[in-house]
Length: 180
Image (cartoon, rainbow, N blue to C red; front, side, top):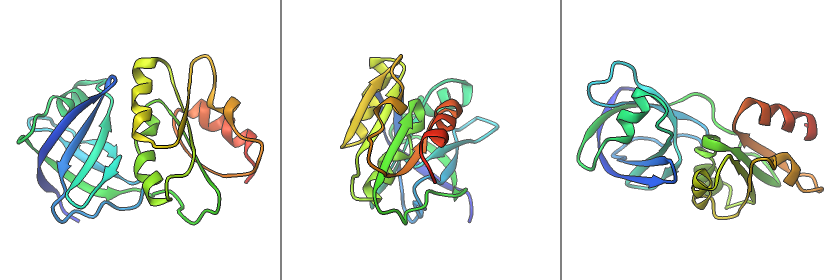
């Protein structure tokens, strides 16, 4: 694996987030849940970003501009170039029978890629505001809840293989409610 330089294809606003589309070239998208280190020009430290969408020609990353590094990535425009390294880390287990995707906030970032790989299963996603909830449009079969409702309150009675990404309190609550 080596550090690759790629061009930005598009940077689209999705609520408060940015969907950064980058030319894929020969890069392997990896397994949903893996990430790439993205380095904006002039930034010292690359930032880890999950693959949100993968097509034959592009990799897309959903980015929350919360600090200088992520704001620099969100400020990139078509034609700008950045460095990528990946895929890195462990992805989701794709050997599931009845998947249910659960995400919270920017934790939904890897779920669209996962959804495509698993045949678009149902999803439950939670956000703190309507503005943030615009990201749910990236998931074709998502039930959306806004604070103060919790995603755990929308879990179906029947058993599913839950695949989740989000804030630690949400994940801890899911571990309590969903048996192995």
